[in-house]
Amino acid sequence: KTFEHRVAFEVFSKRATFHKNMAITQEHVTSVLTEKLKAVHVDVQDLSGGCGAKFEALIVSPLFEGKRLLERQRLVYSALEDEMKSIHALTMKTKTPTEWQNTAP
Image (spheres, rainbow, N blue to C red):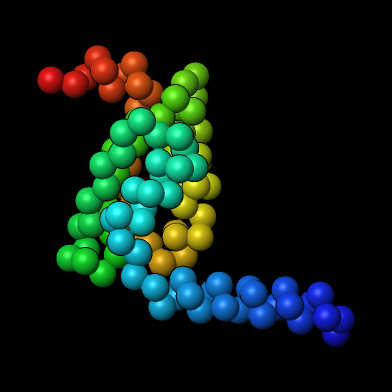
């Protein structure tokens, strides 16, 4: 194999091992969603007792403007692509800033 193939394989193997052994935290999920979705509000709760397997999230992002529910969910799953290798369940509510403002108490 060429050098590039060996390096790519080693990087992929390390990434797969990293995610397989890594417990995802709600702080990490919050950070990723905030950064990748330019979210103005993110509230993530770990429902798995701290093992990082089950999360509930409220994400408010301008990127959701004009998008249907399924498109919004795809954006979230895409943002968490690497993390989803370790997360077993993710329940989410996705809102635009306007929707969030209209539902806030």
